Length: 344
Image: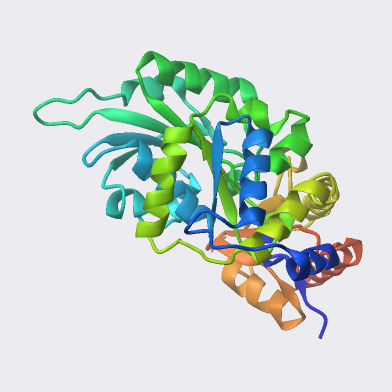
């Protein structure tokens, strides 16, 4: 049975160019700092983000964890958007590894309420920790892949600077934001001390993320990576895929965005579904479901029976994510199946 896998863009498979790059990549021992392909990737990533240095890490979650651990101390408070991935879906590493207290900030579809942000700033006292860092996410996963406006990121950064706070940008899908808005990644990163982005997801590398920032933070991050078990050896065979991803896979993200918009436009016409196509900026479509026959889990299960995979993210919401391994025919299959199921 043909599978149309819309669960996430994390399921993307390497391209043929990536397989070829794996076979020919020069390698060394990255823990000892002498893998030439990893070094090439890190230098390139630092240039793309406009940062002094970069570090190749196994996963985005580890990358976020390293950035926070390197820029905070035990007992600090940090500010996070209320539905941010780093707060809701990364196994509480904020508290377990960095040992900080996250304070969620209200938002309008991922754009933080600046008054609420200011009110949650805390100075160290006998009963409170000091707020030392603000986390941003762009694009925003659980607000339907929204590309957070750079003007908002600039405003948050300005507030942070006034309060002597650092800023971390969870840019797992920041290249989707670049393609959607035309704003270069380096411009987004300029308003953050550190940034993390994924080489997997839409860019289709099999493994890996990168963090970038000031040299002293990245140097500290290298030690934290080893402490967390992320020290890798002849990993140039994987870093080579990351180079191919950055060199060849960014512009094609526009195809994913087009398919997501198309899917949302079709969904908006179906009974029991609530979605606004105008709010689909990139490759994630989250729709509300209010149907007499199905809740979200039941609908996802029925779709899976015919080879269309998606995710229920709540009892009344379903997520579809487009990526290079689903094409126009997969979108058509999904639309046809949903029309049949929801019209019964």
